[in-house]
Length: 358
Image (tube, rainbow, N blue to C red):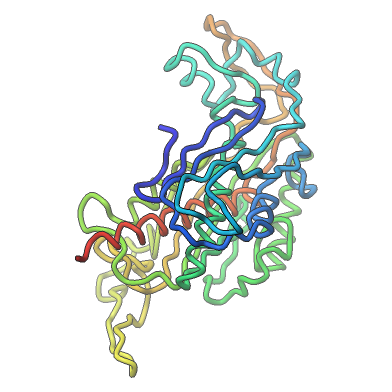
């Protein structure tokens, strides 16, 4: 499947070392003001070569819109776009052509399809996620008009973690450091660790926390279309993601119901709120009106610049030493991808909810 979403849908195309990557967005509401500077800024947050802790590959990642926009607004028809690749070093992958890289999609892709593009992983490369950032930026613009905001940040790299809850942090400081962590002291520790790992040719993983504010009550369904299940699917569809938890998550198993139940209360303006938000803004698969927050675990990048044992296509034991330009830690560039997938999911479910009532 190369299509994501129900009503607001993205179909992406392209490979890491092909001519271009791009996509078609269908179901976008008409009349959304297209802030092209904002959309490009979102792509710049994801693009390679932006700091000393990311891959040095240099790509402009300039998006070209081909349809669906007139006089600065969406028209309601499919929005086609393209981002050209212009800095590939395909020769860096020549020694991997007949090998299966450990923890990559090489073996599974080859076995499933019988043919693969070995250059940078082809379709399974994280470069495909640039299409998601375009669609996610457009979804953010639509959500902004109804008061929904989405922010993600790096909350852990290796064993270095932010100990404060998101409510104790100034999320406006996320872009203050290249690692995209709003706790500036912890951010420096993260950066130091990434540099240490990078100097040895190794990689390291971590966790991204995402917070969605202003989400109305009622998004999602109680059985097969639970909002948290859709959000989990969106996050687990991102390259290198190995885990998802929302609200109190796995920590909740250590407590009793009497300790973590979210108690309701009525406000002076007639609204119903909860005193706590251990549920993470979703109850029974449906948004509760409280902040939706969740965490996404990323594994260490599979391509390491160290010798590793593997096999070739015939099953013969060989030793691989990767070449090229790779991230030592994917977290800084993955932050906008997490936001993009969250924005697309929430906008899609917002539009689905419009079909419920006559």
